[in-house]
Length: 71
Figure 1 (cartoon, helix red, strand yellow):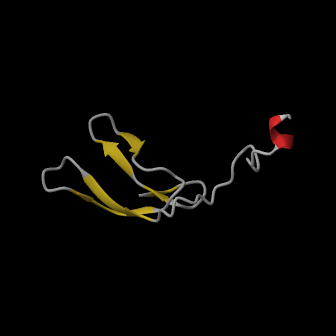
Figure 2 (cartoon, one colour):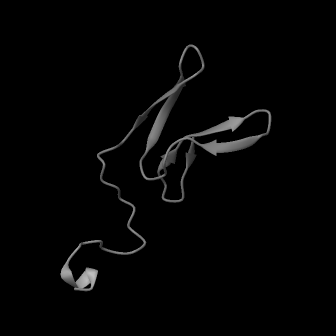
């Protein structure tokens, strides 16, 4: 588990053959308590997801008003 740049916990997995680390979850939600399934095919984890991100949009407010779509 690694902290993303926004301080949320992001799950990652290590490929032991290549020594490469790959992200498993988004950095937009806290993800924690990973556990492999008994057959080793799945990873179960908990995540704080209310489907409301706290990471702002790089484009600012995205309301679709006449002013924002150019009339």
